[in-house]
Image (cartoon, rainbow, N blue to C red):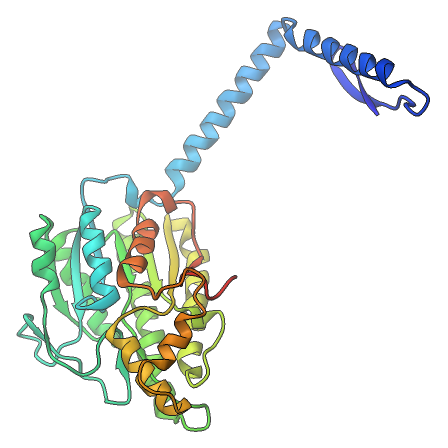
Length: 357
């Protein structure tokens, strides 16, 4: 089949080639190609040129409209603020520091038994549960100082994300201290090791209070604030690789992370008209105190020595190493930045190659 080109049209013409000698066939092809090149080089009528210019202008206008319709959080790079929950240590702290380096002023959130003393934070969670990156230990709330050392403004606010009123107060305080909210990172969460036959209703309820209701509260309160401001924004939530494939003895944790994916997609669909994008990030096996505790608890279940379980998980990683908090922070930096303005409703896996979707 060769192309027969006529003025103003181009249609296919079937030329039988079975009986043609190869040199003759090559000459035919070269002739047609040369004719097409000469045709294309001819000056087009002014009406055709004008139509082409109008089309190009139309496409340019569409691109401009689409750009202005994307998340407006990147329109004013000079002043950006973010709230990061569960940000005193581990992944949350790494995210807060990375966003500060990206130019954000940061509101740091975590739990505390002493609301008046923000320098010392405690985690009031029962010993059966593991707070992201730390079990029940007291530690210094140093993240605020480290962000300020980077030349950015930072404000620390203790709040329980499972309580709607706490999250409302958190957002209000962040706006009062740092300015309009551009990005919410719902990072706080807990984990627990229990088989499906051992877990109680209270176990499931507490898991969902933090991991599901906590994310819902952060998403919805932040969205209302962003809509009130009228400039769009970005909302991000922490899922997990278990939101794509459950881990044994962590079924309720897995279910809570599936819920984060569901909220992320649903909120993304409904908030798009307000120029708010909603995305999630799904860490894998991260070298934090939380995973040290998970290794110990899973080892007890499986009869493995301390360190063996996490080693077995690590052997499944294609890139050959455990993740570190900065790996996750880099992904969140992308989701919070201008390069992801046309992305919404997605949950990105950062696990070094364990779960493939």
